[in-house]
Amino acid sequence: MFQDFKNNIDYFLRSKTKFSRKNFVEKSESALFRNYLENLYTYDLLEQIFDVNYQDKISVLDIGCKNWFYAKGEYSFFKNHCNSLSLHGVEIDAYRVYSNFYSRYEVAKFYTKDLQNCLYIPDNLLNIKHRYNYIVWILPFITKNPHVAWGLPQRFFAPEKLLNHAYNLLLNDGQMLIVNQGEKEADIQQKMLEKLKIKYERKGIVKSEFLQYKNDRYAFLIKNN
Ligand SMILES: C[S@@+](CC[C@H](N)C(=O)[O-])C[C@H]1O[C@@H](n2cnc3c(N)ncnc32)[C@H](O)[C@@H]1O
Image 1 (cartoon, rainbow, N blue to C red):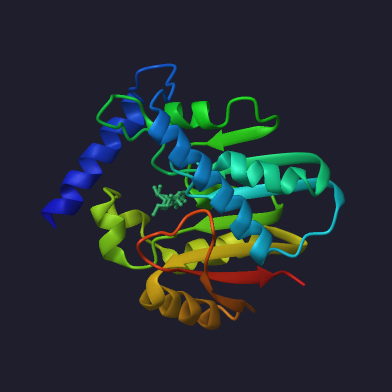
Image 2 (image 1 turned 60 degrees about the vertical axis):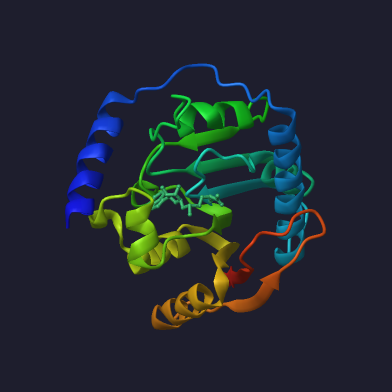
């Protein structure tokens, strides 16, 4: 109750003030190396799960892209499968500020620098109306505790509504990847897909040579055909 009250006030203040230091640049070599591995991991993940044919144009949405530290991995993967790529990332809490006083949005500008037609959208997924060939959704909040612990007001916790909305943003023959943390979350995700009558392939644990996260990650592939 108190946590939600605090989250509401914090969220209201940061969304209104949009405070951030400007022009973030990551200078730490170890952080840059870690980021290099994270992007290789992302590329590898997309390659293992998606079934992509070469197309002239591809549009992609990343849901909950945070500071979009993995944008380059996504971008390189899809750019290898098309002539013209548009990559959008939507984040409801874009103005959360890190301890160095840069917001997620400002940090995302660093990670998406030089990526053509790459757009960071500081908004709620539910306000997105554009439709996409591919959707990537890494670690959605599907239970309330992680959502609240992340600092988001409870009124934004609507996993079924968000999933249904995301599915309806897929163009014909579009595909969506959902990645969950841990088997328990994957089981909840599966039940939700079944309840909404969305057809899926449960791909199991995703492994990559580049990076191993502490908790196993489970993937689902959803096709709109
Ligand atoms: C667990 S984090 C995952 C972040 C990132 N995808 C990653 O892999 O590190 C979930 C993200 O989804 C965002 N989010 C939650 N609800 C959202 C919504 N309705 N619209 C857009 N973003 C949302 C959160 O603010 C958070 O940044």
